[in-house]
Image (tube, rainbow, N blue to C red):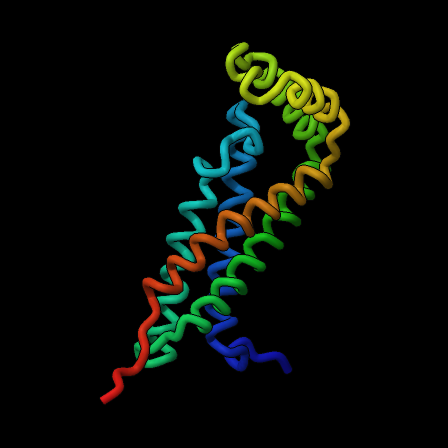
Length: 180
């Protein structure tokens, strides 16, 4: 019979926090959708996932270090725990956003409409900096966007955001035994 406590704490604890982070990130994405602002058009550095990853990852690794490893956490252990957390959070996010997008066809339509409106509202100076050809290409590709493309972009962004935070948190929480 399966026993949750037989799973190593370096996997079990970040997994638990990853589920929480994934559920909260999907809940925030759905909330933004219902508030009229499509969550995929918010710049990634203003995304709630940054805070969720940083805070929950910190507490997950700290819990592992203090309660299971006697205050010692090597960098590789921190990175391994972070990867478990990120994989869990990204998987929950992928499933949640895909399920919500399938149940709400307006989710994709709203992304296309707001995305086109956002690009068309760019000032001429910004269009010159980006390049007229690049802007026209985006305007042509945006209406053909699929839900799968959106979901995999969201998942990729979760890993990209999380990877840098992972390194920082692993270094901050790293504690090695003192050599004498």
